[in-house]
Amino acid sequence: MRMTLGKTLIVVLVCILACGFIMWAFGGLNDMSVDNAKDVFERKVNEDNLYTSECVTITDRNDGNGIKLTVNDNGTIAVKGTADATVNYDLATVSLKAGEYTFTALEGASLKGAYVSLSLEGVDKPADFTGNTFTVVEDTEVVITLHIAEGTEINATVYPVIVKGDEAGTYFAK
Image 1 (cartoon, rainbow, N blue to C red):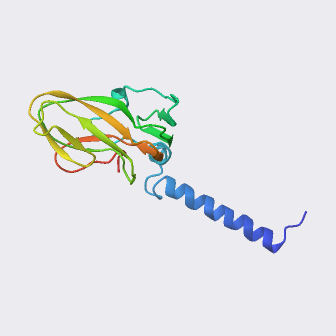
Image 2 (cartoon, one colour):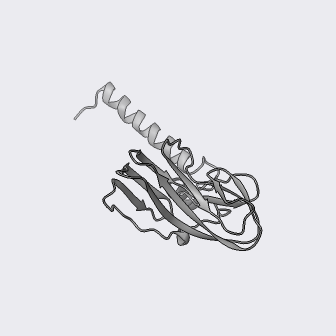
Image 3 (cartoon, one colour):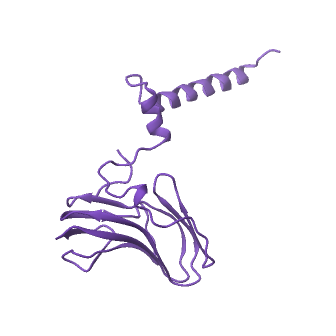
């Protein structure tokens, strides 16, 4: 079977694109390691994040209020649906030592009718919401809670991040 010029060009373009993807996945020619390729496909969680998948206290649920929660292996929590009533889900508990921390949870998301908060005891403020810095004055546990107002349609992932200091962290390592 003879290849036409058009078919030959398509094969060449596919090969070039495949090579480009492989180079991108391995970070170029300088670091063609298996670990580097894994980072592309299995993003590593930020080691500075004090929230880990072991902190999660909620399980997958679809409890009839219109919202479905799915706990992912990496500790993120997928939220989907339309709330039939106002709902609050305690997602996780994190132990903190005295010090200054910053909390974020809906990385890259802007939602109306839904937010994530911390319930704090032993801090200088009664509660701090997504993006705030807070100070723990004595060792304590904080509860990460998702709040969704009735009628809110949501399709988002919660990425809880609690880091020491006053600079917000990211869920995944950069």
